[in-house]
Image (cartoon, rainbow, N blue to C red; front, side, top):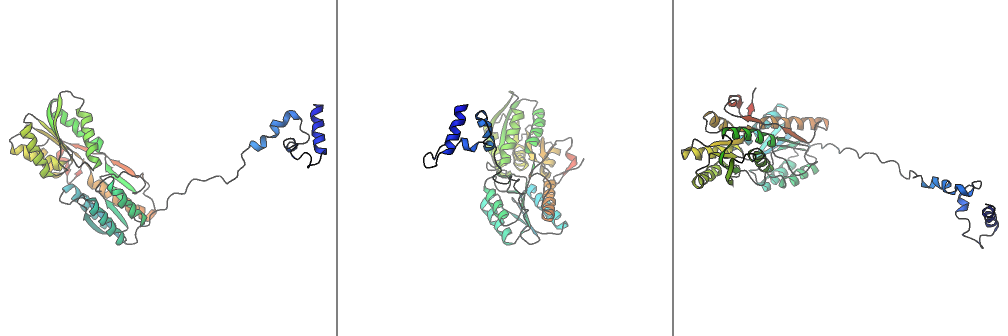
Length: 355
């Protein structure tokens, strides 16, 4: 200890020119601190000083103000399909009820045409856009373009593969609905037999979701065998033609599962033309055409997607958002489907189920 203290004193007495580096560590410690406390003396240096103010959470994104006009654009697939016509008509009626001018147009499942319609909405300074889109990936750019112009988009029926671009994505619970009607179909089939499947558009996420849900139920039964699977692109004519071909190649089938009602109606027509009243057919949508076939026992059932409800929800949320800057809800919203069979089909009309 004495030697240590002596070294400190000698170092302090010497000139800087002789021993410029001496005591660099010792001098930083308090003079009265004994050598044994050198490490604690350095503790203040270890305490992280608040070099910058504590960061606060990033502010919430500012609400999109709309383009400045009182126009709501309603963009859907072709109105020749009753499902999409119901969407457009319901959204139009609700928006007009709330005091908006409406432009209801169709992209015909053409992403390029859809992009042009979004450009038109931007040019018209639309207040908001309600859209049943033309592709989960292809639509992202169009919705982002509207967002950049300050125009909020509210999606119905079909999701896009991006979060935080649209304000709301209100879609039917396709997984739940397809499983529910598949269970009814399995029972109608007596849990056995060969069957075929008609798939929707490959670019539409709903096509994959519904097919997967069908098979999650059906594939539990080794006694049910799929012998044909073809895409009919949601179309009735293709559904008819594909079913006609399938029946010729696989006359032993006793069931057909379809990704939507339009294809199911086509399949039912083809089965009727072939004199095959024994084939159990299901679809998804809840159309009046499907309901009529269920009543006639030419279809087993359908899963009602409550498209009228979803369209109304979208317009109401758009109105609230434009007035308050928020919908108060999550972006992704699921609306449960209703399994429709002969037992409850009388409660269905124009895509509306009444208890």
